[in-house]
Length: 115
Ligand code: AMP
Ligand code: ZN
Image (cartoon, rainbow, N blue to C red; front, side, top):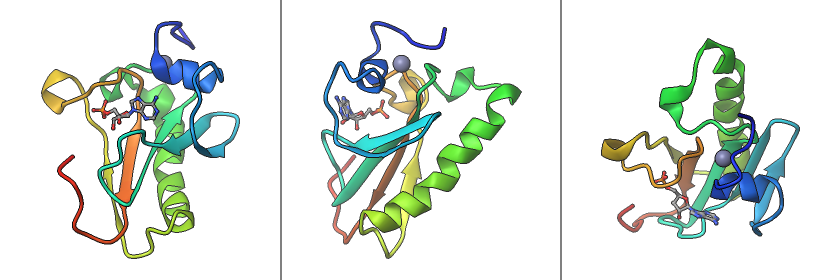
């Protein structure tokens, strides 16, 4: 399924829920995390609904590569010019709350909140 009507991030992709977008292209969307744990904290998601990294297969390799290579460019644009952290929470024990694949990008001067 390309979109899940009950998924909050699919609703953001569809424009049904507002978000502070920082990047959009045909395949990807990046927007500010609503509860930032660092001075810079945004999420990169595929527009395609993929519940988690555990559901990713060889057909998603290009998409995953694009998500990761977008991270440093947006981090720089957002002012994280001294490094950043990338996190992908997967499944219950991975602490995943939203089941639509997303990469957290966190940066900015420390200290940061506990995420
Ligand atoms: P996790 O699934 O644990 O990797 O975390 C989900 C992240 O999504 C959390 O950092 C939330 O603050 C963030 N989040 C949840 N709802 C929204 C929303 N409507 N807009 C932006 N960020 C959100
Ligand atoms: Zn979704």
